[in-house]
Length: 209
Image (cartoon, rainbow, N blue to C red; front, top):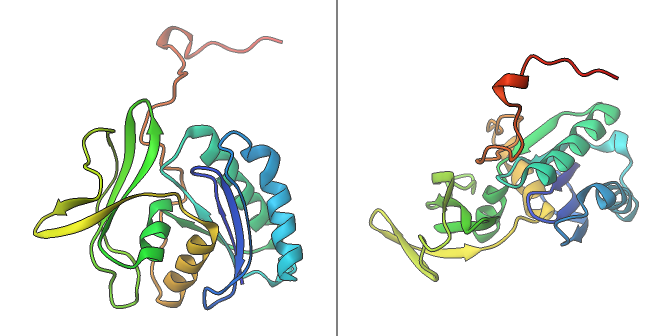
């Protein structure tokens, strides 16, 4: 069994079995309450599924792209839970879960705010049913991608504005593990520099208490 967590948009948590069947799923769409709800959703999913932490074989975590604070909460929660349960972290690029659920050529867009979108493009799934990313993740202007359909090479593909579900993320992680595929690097995909940085003049300053 896998616990799956994604906070690239709202907060979504699920428990899936090794075949990707969903045993429990909980979602909070509010994009500003990740820290408040992620622990509650994990607790509720485990209770609803009847799965104890020691029965989990991994924790699938969506690594984005997404906003700094949201991604950090979900990834930290996943790492902490995996450490406590003695099970590995399985990092997954979040839009890959959307493409996996749709199982066809698609351009997945996410709201990056500031009149920008996160974009990932996918061709046909491979022989194991795992999405094949042909472009992205990247930031694009909000008006750069037409609604409805776009052209990737010679193929016209659907354009969808969607957010990943933990159920799809966990099912994809289960499929990737069964097929012996490698997972994403264990680091968040921010795609944008943080709003607050240390100025060169203060880079070597020590904090005084």
